[in-house]
Length: 424
Image (tube, rainbow, N blue to C red; front, side, top):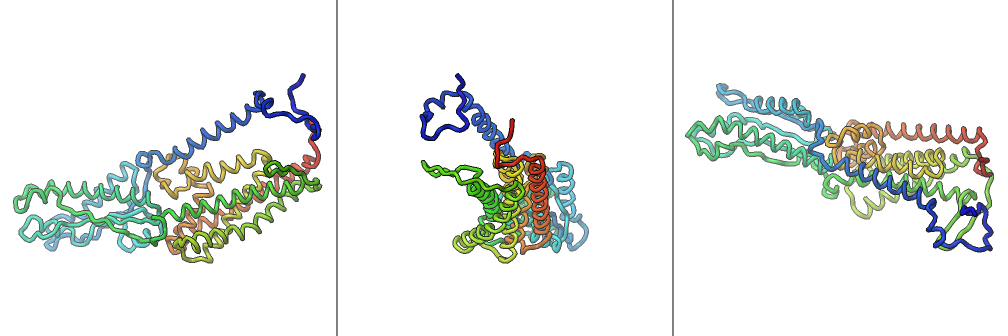
């Protein structure tokens, strides 16, 4: 006797018990394999991008500024020039750090646009203050300034600060080796003569989560589009009679409405665009109005948030229409599993393996987080990532429309209707 379940059992006849079904290996196979693969791949993707940020550093951009004018007498070498040249040469040979030499004006612009994670500054008069240590006029230690940029994320800014401080202390020890030959001052002071002072180069608001609100806000937008898209998709299918509705023990099935795949997708996309107005507004009300998140340029933030949510939602609808039952799994990998570790919002992309840097070129969360970060922390500057965010939103919407309607049109032309069962 076959153990298969009849395709259309009599609802009033004998019911199959769970104890009977649980002993059938065939029911266990597909869910077990899929669940195991999802757990394995998600673990590798998420943890693989964050376990070793220091070991995976690749050209982390840090500014290097030399304002030192040399000693008044002009008889000694310019220590600021020597320090910055040594640090830049070491960084270029290791490729872990991209030391960007610039002046003070360029530094302010780079910090304000999020193009650098921090800075190491040799202040004016540095050489003269070092020279004074070998005389009786020495009253204070020379200083090197380390600037942070919390708007690019607390981890990235912290890593840049640590790297800059390490480079500054190495420079101090190098100078100390030369000065310690003189007995005019205390050997302890001359051994490590330079004081390293750390300060915030581009401050952000107190209610900015130490630079993490951009990431979590972006995650809300992506989840809003992802969950909203899947909810709308299942709700429409249920209402049109192409899926059952189950709420606890209650089960219903609506009469099937004859409608093509293309028209169904169009309906779902229109609903996504309409409902996203409400979800985007609620996200801003909750985060800014209720929780008090620091935010400016509110009209720009709302418009960008709405378009980002719609882009994700349309992508979900297109993938579901193309892949059917496994569409939610495919869209989960596209918008969540692959997007989170390649977003660069918590761990800088420069500190992730090359695979994640490659994903960051096109994965939506990286593009959206760059745009949100530019609005929240960098005065909505286009060159801080906002322009790229708008471009990638447009690309995502066009790609979703072309892919989704191309697939449904193809299915409709082949006569692969959802209304009737397909022949084997």
